[in-house]
Image (cartoon, rainbow, N blue to C red; front, side, top):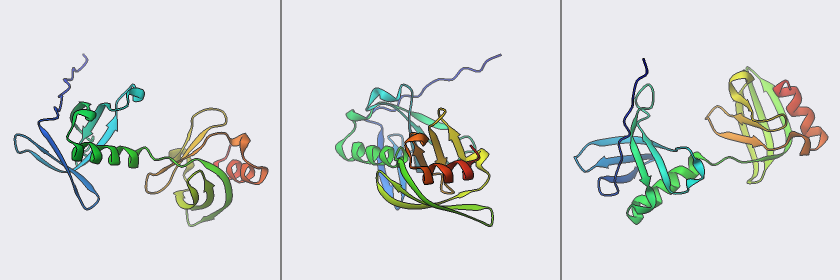
Length: 171
């Protein structure tokens, strides 16, 4: 037997977002307050301002609070907070060069050049959980903070970078 789920639409008139330190908070018009929320795009992700899932990360399954059908209809302040949260979550630097990778105490320490500049990050060496093969030459690497980095095309990297990636990611 399949469970059925209802989508709760969050209208522009019943939501108010705010920032509390690094947390995006939500207050509903009925007074319900969420001290921390997460925003995720629903499929199709190409819909721009439409279909944003608002989730409660304090529950085991990050339960959905509701869906904003079009955040472009929110107040300017709320819209800016939603855009900032989405931009932060979907920020994925593209690795263009791997300068070095050092393995130490169960961690991999990466020094890379990306389309956003030079970066250093740390990932666990249990690569099965922290590397996603998107295609034969495209990979997503996830660091210990759950930040994602994309290798758009392994074959487009210089030979030194390719060698480090193949050795460290066992590909």
